Length: 135
Length: 381
Image (tube, rainbow over the protein chains, first blue to last red):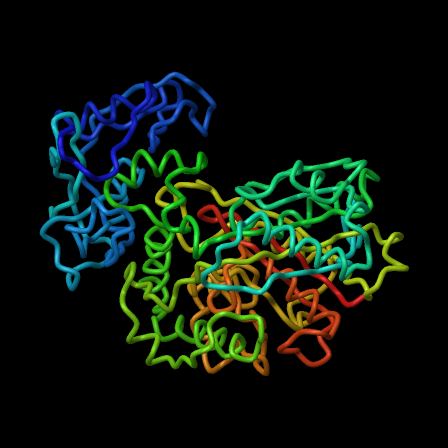
């Protein structure tokens, strides 16, 4: 028991490299080893050429805001202390999207296309979560 | 080959809708089913096909309670709130194939008194991607995941919260006139604007209810419907559609388009009707925004024009397109859209509590599981 009371992921062999990357402070994305298409979230098959061969690349961690929401109600008790919190949906430079909480961004300055980048928050010994900050 | 007019609605039934009960969801589901079967003029043992809503009673419950001796088909359509209307397509297919004569669709739930909807998503297998990659960041409930779609629509097209409020207000007006609706307090646009923020831009009054109750529908082969109790309601067109990136909204190419955009053209073509022909529409309303988005995706207006389309009471009983005449999930009860099928049937029979005058053709939609869509277009028999 480490006292962390929020929802935690249960990585699989298909997804573990993503979580390992976050622990090392970088964003790792799947890239099809045959056609080169980058995909997210991690999964077994390339939806473009159906290959199951995969490489993992180090991504830039940079992107532009696509949409957002601000959560004012805790749908899980672990998040009560965070309210209100901002969730950004971001078009990453590699062509995939991510959704994570934001840090240090004012609601008033949010707009589509705003440049952001990832930072990495170690929330417990074996878990680092991505968060977005201003570029 | 087409399912056009391959089945007719012969019976509909509901329980009293409640916010608070000590009854089981099984008992509510069976009561609603008995009401629908009685409405059709059938005996419970006449049912030979079952499509119960997922997470509820299973075929064995019906065989045991109804003494069904020759059940020929049972299935579920795992599409969340799109399931009930998608079940119409499934029922028509098995009727058209000659497998069944009378298929029962049913749902019972204790959404208020039992497990709340907002917390159930975490356990559903179709959401394992968001479970691993979004929920740890605190993106957990449908209202949060859909808020991102609504925000995108607002930023792209200038849609406002006051426009979404029109849907909540109109639906409440209908509920107030419907004896079997749970929300009776009058609501204004200002009330909506003053309600607390849940998942910005969605306020409390943009969100549907958590309810206790049951609803059920009997669909029959057309040649078996002639001698039944009520005038049948004929299914003219039906379809389901699944969006790209069906469970992870984040990865969807266009956040403002739902699976219904794929289904609606098929259903309209099958039915052979135009939008002008639709007298009444029961549109799945888990959130106000989802109603507006579906009206666009069905082609009642262009993408981005939904906000102005719904203004000035356009969706009211006397508006240009009466929508959710029973009060919907927003103000009648959250019966996952089975109540929408019940209501459309009553409208087309002319026996609704809040009746659209001379309603002859109408449609019902389902929406669920983060974007799946379903639609059925029906006419008075």
